Length: 110
DNA sequence: GAGTTGACGACTT
DNA sequence: CAAGTCGCCAACT
Image: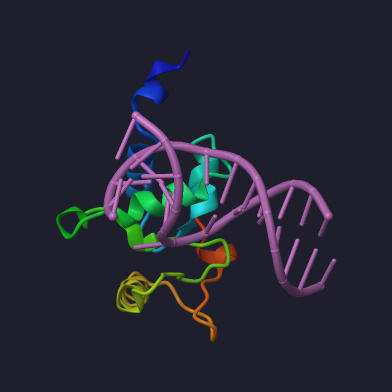
């Protein structure tokens, strides 16, 4: 029984993985969940990032978006706007629909 | 302690 | 092809 992986909470693995995202690239919730061994646990991934506090902003949560390549928040459009701004500063371009080209900026974890 | 919610994704109808 | 439902893990009520 892989105690190593089990020892680390799913949400902690999300943080570690997000920290490994190279600058100028982005990834999706589903991709992270898939890497962690739960291809359908995208919800847990999203919640893990939501749990981040201002003091934990050292994690590039901004590089994590939904499978559509768009920023999808819930009621916090201010944060979504901030995320878009941060991504543009990293060199990531947005489409006319505020969408990111995952084929170009999508992070290849494998 | 149990139930519901939440930055989503994939499958089923 | 489009809409609806289930699944995942942790936190909040």
